[in-house]
Amino acid sequence: MPRFKYRDGVAQNVVAISYATLGHAAALALLFARAWPPNLIGVALSAHTLMVAAYLMHEAIHETIFASHAENDMLGRVVAFLAGGAWAGYAELRKKHLHHHSDLMDPTTFDFRGFLERAPRLVARVIELLEWCHVPAIEVLLRGEHALRPFLRTQGRRAQLRVLLVALVSLVWWGALWLVSPRAFVLYALSYLLFVVGLRVFDAFHHTFDLVVLPDYDAAYVPPDGRGRLYEHAHTFSNVIVRGRPAFNVLVLNFAYHNAHHAKPGVPWHRLPELDRTLYRGTPRQERAIGSHLRDFHRYRLERIRRDATAVPAESDQAPVNIGAVAVSLLTL
Image 1 (cartoon, rainbow, N blue to C red):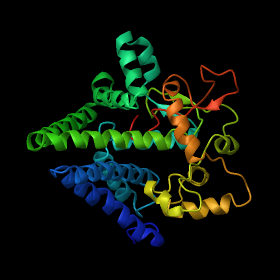
Image 2 (image 1 turned 90 degrees about the vertical axis):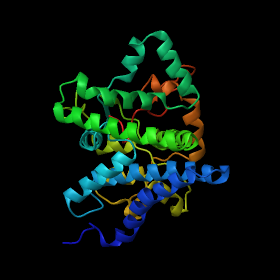
Image 3 (image 1 turned 120 degrees about the vertical axis):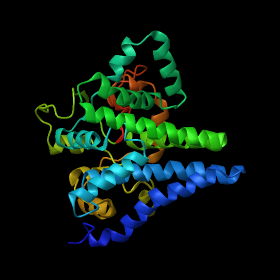
Image 4 (image 1 turned 90 degrees about the horizontal axis):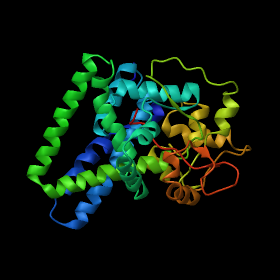
């Protein structure tokens, strides 16, 4: 039995997995240099290798890399740990993402908007100030909730032990990093924040689905009437980085071809450009230009933490627009 699921994707997947793991190790080495040029390269390389790890996890969820479920699952767990998804747990992240595809919504198990409404005013204002500065405070809040969740909800001893193990490994890693090189500690923390922001920028406008709070991802959910393929297409957007230059989209494992991915979720990342050309050769695709994408990401940075992706901005009396979404990362519950 072949190890890889698709023969035409062996080289691409070997390169992607090697880049995410060995490339990340090389980035860490650059952070320990005592000169700023290699440090800055290390920060950028570290952030990007983590992005590729997150998108590899996405491929593992859809089982498009290896032939066996067990090997896809193992890859998913490794890259989820590398990218900081171990607090939530790969199994739960997988359930969340499959909910997203099957029920055509953006699920969450933590009502962060309700939290902000109930939180002391100072806490809410600090979070809003950080978000205004593009510091991903909501994502940090979600990761903190993931760490506390097994102890506040009935998730069982296994989940609690997993979080305690992740906490121990994190404490040892960050502590050792600080003792060896406080400079590398700060640079690596910066690279991780840049990685989280990078995921947010790229994922914010892929959908105008509803954000739905579920008690857990084993809960049954019945989508409203009319949530079929036409709805999915109308509320899904691609954000191709450079039209006519497919190599640029490999930087995010072709996640930019989001309409094509949702049309056929089982198609591997290396085949998405061709699928996109086939599906939309004579049919308009929902697509956002990169310029307006970046402009709106900045413009609606506070609005999107208060409202769903399709909303009327507070300062506007116009029709609803796509203001983007927050808390839809592959790595948060």
